[in-house]
Length: 377
Image (cartoon, rainbow, N blue to C red; front, top):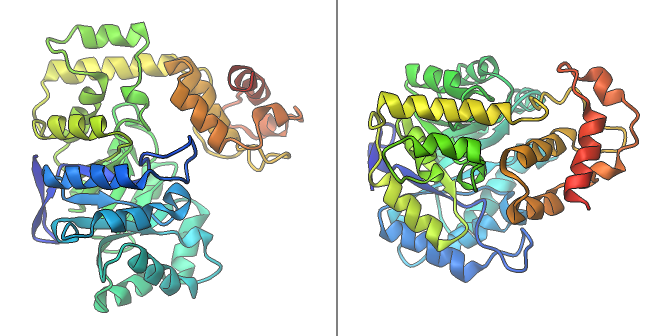
């Protein structure tokens, strides 16, 4: 396993981090974790050099932390940098912060959390962070020995929004969605470069875009990989692209099967910054551009269309519609649609208010109708 140096902690962090958002489940639901298999996978990863495990209060219906706590028993906690997140957006007020943190410590069966993040900062949530003076609470928690390092995960709309947040506090690290398809999404590569310029390590999430960059490739995309003198899988190219960024501290992968753990360990034991050639980077960029041309509705998830009059999560549905064009309908995609999309796009009443507000002038009503046809038939 390759490692990156974490200056604030004076320690080496594995380039592969175990993300506990997509643990194996039982019965097709998201909330029933296969605990025995999840514990086996996490411990296998640690036994093979992974020393960073990332979870969150809300993952798997608030069950993920407890399972991670079980996995880190029997001496595994001492081998691990443990990360979890404060879900301030589900709290009633600042008074809940201490209660939630203590609950997390209990679930994780630990006295101290190494890497504690303010979870999912963007838009109006940033105003709440400031109004509640959350970093004052976190600084006190650090003084009390309950947490060690303070960071945040970002899901905002632009690098500029990210830079504003990064400049506000002396963060120990930050977590960004970065992959070769999303170079310009959210904070993007521009945000990554700004963090590096300020000496803030970056933890990468969604390097495989929720698994989409590891799914079966459309022939037009596979043709690009076939030009390279290697039999690497699309998933391996995506992981290597993220590893090629020198300011990345660790790359989180949400693994749901032992085979994925074994494969990711293999890849990130042999990948590092500067290893991709100019030709390989050029081919990856071309593949990404071809992906983008397959997108039916270039929704930016700006949410100007929200709230929907019948409470449909329009940006989420638009993502499924685009994913259908990109990857075809997989069993995994159908399962996620069934699990996470409610109300369904077929509930759309075609009022048109969303289209009036959309700055991209997208035919949202048509997208709802098409998505319903693809996933609800």
